[in-house]
Image 1 (cartoon, rainbow, N blue to C red):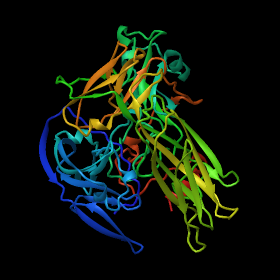
Image 2: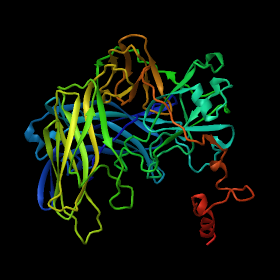
Image 3: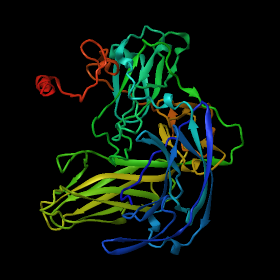
Image 4: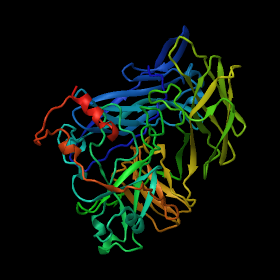
Length: 554
């Protein structure tokens, strides 16, 4: 059983290529399951072992199925059935830890040259106070016949896009919609006396490359779709500008359990006009059918995390605020258009380095959320700090939330406590407030048919962008005070409201010009330009070049 917080972000991939469908059904056969942790018996509801997964720390159960497939695939939910259960049916599960919907998720991966698509969801959930469990599901596996184009082969020697042409770079730190003006491009050294329709922006976003090499990640810079205001006449005028969605270094990474890129504080993007017509954001095609659901609210995700300390002074685990000399701190959040009738879900991870039993006391707007107890260190263990996790829920009548954390050092003055991160999940009304904001409604993936999103007070929201695929953003346009658009259900999507009063500005370094380089095409070539198999590659700073040469020749 996996003993970790399972947080997933899902993008159902859509392709306009030839596809085949594979419809399947699963019936969950519920039963009682017993587990023992340090001789303590825990009884939880479960089902068939092939689909069963559980987190015994938080006392949650999950459905998880790794489905073999012959090629690149994705899953579309067709139908699911539930039944109402009582509190007693939960057995030893924690009712307060239940999610409020099944949250169906899908992912694709490869292992030993075999293809798999994974389906996960919460089989027991709390639907507005009514406990339900899933009894059956019907889903469809859609196989993409163009998998070779969808998953570039890392074995192919390709020429990098940076190999030719004139290139400049800039960077961002946070995710959002950015405005690039003519004057900013000129400050980079970019020649703006070009046909603006040929301007392209490349970048892979600020996410970390996956740890597993069988997880897809672009093997070269990827072109991003952009929205160019005023390019139609073929001249770059002073009032023309570019809008595009940039992913910063602030996205959740499940593998490393962090929102912060562990290796870079900057997400770089590259711009050129040397490669012909560029990719542009296209208008989304809305379904023609009548909507069966109307979304006027969305599921919000807010977090706080800083990487400041590495107690073990090794590895990838970094922690944030330290408690020691100062043992109490308050972290303030503001959530606009918060629906106060819905409970806010609270998640936080802590660590303590103490040779006594220590603890954290946590409250939200003076409501007690719980105590996190952490065992003492052992002189004979090579452990720098011990972690523990708190999950809770609370309600509030205010859109301003103060999270108070107090550290009890267990009577050991040398103890040090650490906050890793805080996550708040809440419900918000879809109402414009003069700023761009990301939104998604998890019910979009848990239902079948057509839904309509409706945003009120939307006069300054001229567009909504579908940012589920950051490289191929599409748009919905608006010129009314109420903004409505229709979407297909059965798949999760993420959107951003593009408010004309709140564009972000990119940043630049002193050296903005990028020299031509062709690592993809030449790194495996010998001095004669012929491909040569190699044992390993050494990356080094310039001042260590001679030492690296000695090591390579050893």
